[in-house]
Image (cartoon, rainbow, N blue to C red; front, top):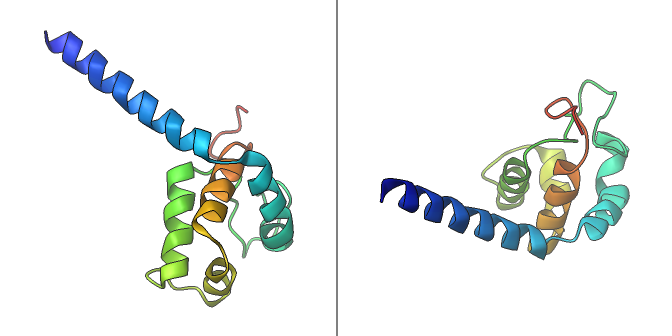
Length: 110
Protein backbone atom coordinates (compact mmCIF):
# COMPACT_ATOMS: atom_id res chain seq x y z
CA UNK A 1 0.00 0.00 0.00
CA UNK A 2 2.82 2.39 0.91
CA UNK A 3 4.50 1.89 -2.50
CA UNK A 4 1.18 2.51 -4.26
CA UNK A 5 0.74 5.86 -2.47
CA UNK A 6 4.30 6.92 -3.30
CA UNK A 7 3.83 5.95 -6.95
CA UNK A 8 0.50 7.78 -7.15
CA UNK A 9 1.95 10.95 -5.61
CA UNK A 10 4.99 10.81 -7.89
CA UNK A 11 2.76 10.40 -10.93
CA UNK A 12 0.57 13.31 -9.89
CA UNK A 13 3.61 15.54 -9.38
CA UNK A 14 4.98 14.57 -12.78
CA UNK A 15 1.66 15.33 -14.48
CA UNK A 16 1.42 18.69 -12.76
CA UNK A 17 4.96 19.71 -13.70
CA UNK A 18 4.45 18.63 -17.32
CA UNK A 19 1.26 20.71 -17.49
CA UNK A 20 3.14 23.75 -16.21
CA UNK A 21 5.91 23.18 -18.75
CA UNK A 22 3.37 22.65 -21.53
CA UNK A 23 2.00 26.13 -20.87
CA UNK A 24 5.41 27.73 -21.42
CA UNK A 25 6.53 28.68 -24.91
CA UNK A 26 10.26 28.13 -25.36
CA UNK A 27 10.38 30.09 -28.64
CA UNK A 28 8.62 33.06 -27.06
CA UNK A 29 11.12 32.84 -24.21
CA UNK A 30 14.02 32.82 -26.65
CA UNK A 31 12.62 35.85 -28.47
CA UNK A 32 12.10 37.78 -25.24
CA UNK A 33 15.56 36.77 -24.03
CA UNK A 34 17.10 38.16 -27.21
CA UNK A 35 15.14 41.40 -26.89
CA UNK A 36 15.54 42.00 -23.15
CA UNK A 37 18.12 39.81 -21.42
CA UNK A 38 20.96 38.97 -23.82
CA UNK A 39 22.73 42.33 -23.60
CA UNK A 40 23.68 41.59 -19.98
CA UNK A 41 23.33 37.82 -19.55
CA UNK A 42 24.58 36.78 -23.00
CA UNK A 43 22.71 35.11 -25.83
CA UNK A 44 22.89 31.72 -24.13
CA UNK A 45 22.52 32.98 -20.55
CA UNK A 46 26.21 32.48 -19.82
CA UNK A 47 27.56 36.02 -19.67
CA UNK A 48 31.34 36.30 -19.70
CA UNK A 49 31.05 39.51 -17.63
CA UNK A 50 31.58 38.78 -13.92
CA UNK A 51 29.04 41.39 -12.81
CA UNK A 52 26.14 39.62 -14.57
CA UNK A 53 24.99 36.22 -13.31
CA UNK A 54 25.08 33.18 -15.54
CA UNK A 55 21.47 32.09 -15.85
CA UNK A 56 21.72 29.48 -18.62
CA UNK A 57 20.82 26.13 -17.11
CA UNK A 58 19.50 27.67 -13.90
CA UNK A 59 16.49 25.94 -12.35
CA UNK A 60 13.18 27.06 -13.90
CA UNK A 61 11.45 27.59 -10.59
CA UNK A 62 14.34 29.70 -9.29
CA UNK A 63 14.29 31.92 -12.39
CA UNK A 64 10.52 32.38 -12.16
CA UNK A 65 10.70 33.30 -8.49
CA UNK A 66 13.62 35.68 -8.98
CA UNK A 67 11.87 37.52 -11.83
CA UNK A 68 8.60 37.73 -9.89
CA UNK A 69 10.47 39.03 -6.85
CA UNK A 70 12.27 41.69 -8.91
CA UNK A 71 8.94 42.69 -10.46
CA UNK A 72 7.18 42.95 -7.08
CA UNK A 73 10.09 44.73 -5.41
CA UNK A 74 10.66 42.03 -2.79
CA UNK A 75 14.08 41.45 -4.37
CA UNK A 76 16.01 44.65 -4.87
CA UNK A 77 18.26 45.44 -7.79
CA UNK A 78 17.62 48.67 -9.70
CA UNK A 79 18.57 47.24 -13.09
CA UNK A 80 16.61 44.00 -12.74
CA UNK A 81 13.62 45.78 -11.21
CA UNK A 82 13.42 47.95 -14.31
CA UNK A 83 13.84 45.00 -16.66
CA UNK A 84 11.27 42.84 -14.85
CA UNK A 85 8.70 45.64 -14.54
CA UNK A 86 7.56 45.24 -18.14
CA UNK A 87 7.44 41.43 -18.12
CA UNK A 88 4.06 39.72 -18.12
CA UNK A 89 3.41 36.51 -16.20
CA UNK A 90 3.68 34.62 -19.51
CA UNK A 91 6.99 36.36 -20.30
CA UNK A 92 8.41 35.27 -16.96
CA UNK A 93 7.26 31.68 -17.45
CA UNK A 94 8.61 31.58 -21.01
CA UNK A 95 11.97 33.10 -20.05
CA UNK A 96 12.39 30.69 -17.16
CA UNK A 97 11.54 27.73 -19.40
CA UNK A 98 13.94 28.92 -22.10
CA UNK A 99 16.92 29.64 -19.85
CA UNK A 100 16.45 26.44 -17.85
CA UNK A 101 16.62 24.45 -21.10
CA UNK A 102 20.09 25.76 -21.93
CA UNK A 103 23.47 24.46 -20.90
CA UNK A 104 25.16 26.24 -18.07
CA UNK A 105 27.41 25.74 -15.10
CA UNK A 106 24.54 24.08 -13.20
CA UNK A 107 23.83 21.49 -15.89
CA UNK A 108 26.73 21.30 -18.32
CA UNK A 109 25.53 17.84 -19.39
CA UNK A 110 23.01 19.27 -21.88
